[in-house]
Length: 315
Image 1 (cartoon, rainbow, N blue to C red):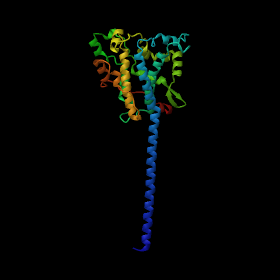
Image 2: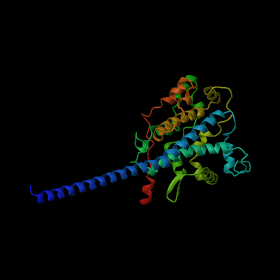
Image 3: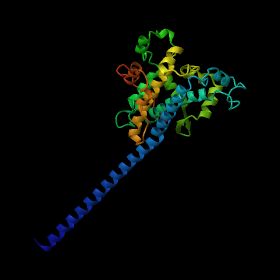
Image 4: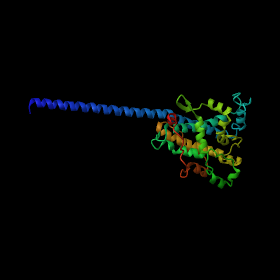
């Protein structure tokens, strides 16, 4: 082979090698940028959606604990809401020393939860998943369980049967149907120049106080919480319930249990510790515990629906 041909071949090989190295470098840069973009997107999702949902669950968990602890008190007297609506001088909005804050803030914390779930569902859309396990609409099946606990009439049927009580003689609240939950979630979302978030307590309270139409959607939450008062002291929770003919404390305990189960699953996504769910029901009789712990989803609709807020902006 002549020297000239060798030089030509070396030149061709060098050119091909240089092009290959350039292409490989470009591919690795694109791959790195894509991974960086996905990582940044994931971090934004965690910061904007999972952390607020986790915080909402934590606050709801703590508030239900206080409600159960204070069943013998008058903190949830329903008349406090009337005073707020009437802007009465005896209401706490006129004087923070007056009673009423605990009830209205409890309603807000439940509404806040629905707002966080609705915000995730509506902002990210139907094809986006925050979870490694499932689509965002069933982002965690425990959201569906929690949703159903606000409307599942048959939850404690076996307990009532064993206790010799009929459902008709028991106070209960299972009227917060799915479309009400969606509507509450929608009402709790606010748009600040294209940035969607949850209404503050101050904003919520002002709208609750001034708008009858706004208050209407929160009536099922009022039914769940109002007048959970003056339960007998020094009794087990199941005996308190039977004494007052009121199932609502048990329903709240069930909500708290599945709220903690949801927190556990979120914690696997964001790597933080959460309290045990089982500790919520460990002191309950077996029949009640089983009804709460083994809530089946076979006949329950997924927590699904509504449009993508981002799509609405462009359509």
